[in-house]
Structure formats: C-alpha cells, structure tokens
Length: 415
Ligand SMILES: *Cc1c(COP(=O)(O)O)cnc(C)c1O
Image (spheres, rainbow, N blue to C red):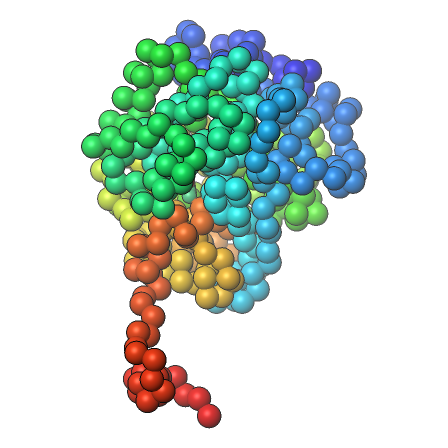
C-alpha cells in the first residue's frame, strides 16, 4: 500500500507496519490509527480526477483507503448515499442551510456497511474465511450482509435488547448469531474471548483500525457532494465513538490533500441517558467514566465506549460541540425528519438532527450556520420505536360513514 505509511498507536505513539490483520498496539494495547502519505495521494489524485470518476461506491476513494485493491470476491454496493438540502426542515429548526446525508440508504440500511465492506476486503487480504464481531445491532447486520455477498461465514454477538429488525437481518443473511443476555459490555467481552480462541477475523471497530477508514468515506462523500465547500458544522450521533472519529479523519484527509480549504466543527450528539464521551469531551479530559445505557436509541446505548479516546480527540480538534438529547427529543427528530424531509431514521439515526435542534435552542450555534446532519441508520430497522414516534393509523371497517366520522374526529376537513 504505497499511500499508507504506518499504523500509529493513539496512546503511546509507537508506529508499526500496517498488516491486513493488524489490530491493537502490541506494546500498550491502544487503538491504532492508519497514517497516510498525503504527498503521494496528491500526486495520484486531484479533485477533478475524482469528479470524473464513474465508480459509484465508497471505493471511489481508493487513494485514501488502506487496501491493495478490492479483492476478488463479490461485494455489495456500499456508499454514495443520498445527500439532500433540506430547506423546509432547516427553516423549522432555524438553521441557515441544512443538509441531510442519508446513510440509511446503504445495502443493510446503516452507515456500518462502510466498515463492514472494509472488513470483508481486509479479511480476504488476511486469508481468513470467518469473520466475527460484537455489536449493538447495525455492525452485526452489516457484517452479516457484506459477508454473505462475499461468501464468508460469520459469528455475531449481539445484546438481547437488539431490535427485531436487526436480528431478522442477521438471520436472513445466515450468520451464526449469539444473543447475549447482558449489556453491550458483556457482549463485547464474550466476543473478544471467542475471537481469540478460534482465530476469526475481528470486525470489532475498536480493535481493528481499518474499520474507521471505511467509515470515513461518509465524510469524503460529503465533501464531494458539497462541491468541496465545507459547511460550518457536521452533526452526528455517537456510541462507541468510531463513527465520529472516522468522520473527522475523512475531513482531515480531504483537508490534508488540499481538496477542501477548511474543516467543519463537529456536533457530537449522545442520549441524555448515556453520554460518557460527551461528558468527558465537555470537561476537556480523555478520562471518561462508564455510564448506564438508558435510551431507546439502541445503536448508541454504549456505556463503555470502545473508541472514546479517538472520539474525544476528534471533538476537541474540531473545536466541536457536545449535546445530549432525551428520548422524547429523539422521537421528535424522527417525526421532523420523516414529515419535513421524507427521511426515515431509526432513533440513533435521528439523534444528530435532535442535537442540531437542541444546540440552536441552547444558543450553542449561530442561526445562519450551515450544517450537515448525518442520518446513520434507517427507521425500518426499529419499527416499534417508529410507531412510538409517529403514532397509529385510523383503523375502521370499510364503510364511508365511519371514514367521515374518523376524519371529523381527527380534524381532517375535506370538501
Ligand atoms: C453504530 C451507530 C452509531 C454510532 O457509531 P459509533 O461508532 O458506535 O459511535 C450511530 N448511529 C447508528 C445508526 C449506528 O448504527
């Protein structure tokens, strides 16, 4: 990989050669970060080359990715998700210009597909035929789907609270699924032990440094979809912290390569029932404390975040803002996105938008700011919470009189 220099430990700073199955720092156990040669990347790619490219997936950004190629196995089409200017919703929230990056429009309906697509390519490079992970749900379903396309077998550990939609995906894609009766922390621990024991390829984002490199492609796309004119802010929901760290890495890559001329400030949004990363970031310390996992947003109910250090550093470096939102605020953001932008988000997918609304209300951001809200997962994954947010339909026998009654009761006036 001529574009990659090495893998540097985020804790002790030691550097290592980047192998396909590189995981954590052999010296101190810290999480590694892949480092690139931006002069080399610049010599190979300009933003005009990029704009002329036909590849409509995350692999469009090959020069920024830590892979030799995309392997020989079949793969799903991940990335190049829709990007909208959401004028009506922006006005409602009181934002200058609001954009929505809808990453729920991916093969398995979440941003996690970007990491899993990367995992599948690296597992092939590493010569493995089985991949395993633990996940609150979306990393699991995306690994199961991407692995099914590529012909890998998978062992997947999820906490028993994972929503049915996500578990249905796992079963449909033929994963070996272990539903752990315990917290996400318990789930992670058991998966780590099993991976160690059987030598499977490890798709745990906090251990495998390549996964964040897949996730960062969402930021590379945002830059391109903004015509390389960066917004003031980018809002995103945060659980383990890999996604926000990946997003920041993507923006820094584009900046280092000279494709954008400024970096956005990150708006890190967590649930007020579980916000260990925001608590530490707001106190400007890397010394985060575990919390309980009390939120309907299952994808970000992470009391012991695995990538807290990278995430807190990303928030700090970007001069970012932290906002915590209640479950009611998340449900409201789901309705706002659905009704004013036609975007159906799962709770964690709408959390970034809930954070924008709250940040405006709290006066944390200027009213004329331009903001990208990243919707990280699709609402069909968690239908129970969607109905909780949106309510039940009119239900009547097939009679016109009853329809008229029902309309009157609902206040629907028709000629
Ligand atoms: C995983 C996930 C997140 C948060 O990503 P982390 O890397 O855990 O911080 C947010 N939204 C959705 C839908 C997710 O699946």
